[in-house]
Figure 1 (tube, helix red, strand yellow):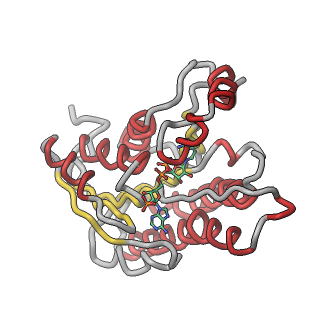
Figure 2: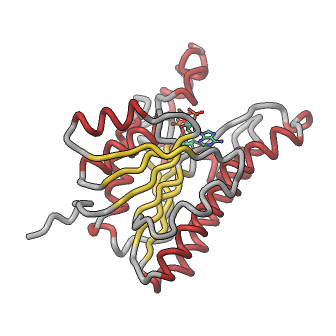
Length: 247
Ligand code: NAP
């Protein structure tokens, strides 16, 4: 019987694959047999080397979403059937002081680039009559409000909405579109929180699993959502949060 979870023969693009969650997703997809194009605004050599050391296949593609249209020509004739939109940034300030520059920077990367990268991917697949999968990286702040992160919260709510509309429009074309909402995951993004003893203790006390998530926890979920095992899963925003939102 063929492996329901195999991604063998597929080509995947993972954005922001040089570190953190994106790196773990790239490694996980390659572990299931996909060739992974590691998109980053800087070199993804470390990710490519890890994948190759594990016997997988990968390459780097320089993509900087300071230009939200950066990936508009990436998919033409490239045979990419999996897209993981992981690149994201966060800027913190009180809402009353939040600057237009911070608002635009966060919305451009987290929301606008994500939509237009999906658009370029979906257009290519529909035109060439190929099936495929999109996984967008959402957040707990796709559901909750957060504090001092207005643009991030707006953008991550938008990621949930974009995921659902594209799932509706593309299901008939054999393209699944899902999102993962990671809980508190130990990466660069959350280093400041983990280094603050009070915040760290408060966060841990609220997580039913009693620990920070690892990037690998998200990698495994992404591989599942891109596999045949998930072919009837579309439009979902899957919480991978150690139980945080259930509490
Ligand atoms: P991270 O270590 O800061 O990684 C963010 C990634 O996005 C990096 O590869 C970064 O590249 C890339 N990126 C940022 N701006 C970019 C741009 N203009 N063009 C291309 N790539 C860009 O954080 P992470 O925790 O792994 O975050 C990955 C995703 O998970 C984000 O969407 C984040 O919102 C989401 N998330 C994280 C958590 C968590 O607890 N860690 C929770 C919920 C959601 P550089 O290294 O060059 O900056």
